[in-house]
Length: 239
Image (cartoon, rainbow, N blue to C red; front, side, top):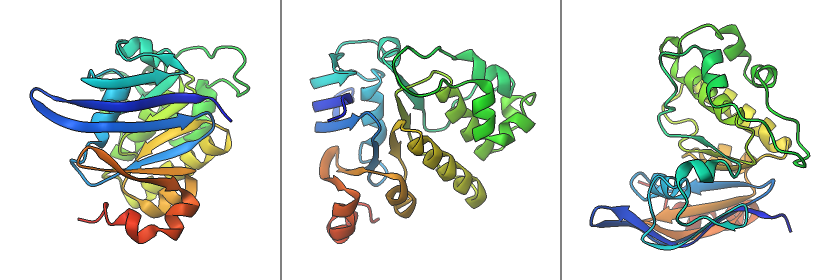
């Protein structure tokens, strides 16, 4: 079995005195694509923030690359091979496209078996970025900014790419290009944890699905299990 890149075990966390997560278990293994689904306000972004050390858990254990990292700061966690595409993209507005891509670039360690990410490789994945490589971050459309955020994360040469709200608020044509790119990354063997609401698109790329409601995992299963048990799984996604 492929090694676990991240594993959250019994994680509880919250903000101030308000508890948001209740015993979250979540694992992603090398080469696996896992979705994290749920209605707004159910705890998905809090799970991602806890995973990256941006929020300290009050209980439970965080494993990264099979190492105990429960108390580790964010930069130590990211250095273990995690790439983050945050909700809202958070690109550097005063840098141009190429400067954004180079700002967080990190060389790939030996023995991964996958080619390293470079400017040329990102531009091949997202030709729009090459066309706009001298444009400032504020001169890009929302879809182009999301491409840039993904490209920036890839330039860290991660073992696991985490996308929070991968296509939220994007025009249909841009959503299509993002999903196509994620499909390419999946084919390349990159592990991905993706948060999004587009169930049909997620089912085309994912190996497993995790559904959260009220800060708890309420359903988890493979693509085949979701197809066979779709009513039970998706009732937690309906408004």
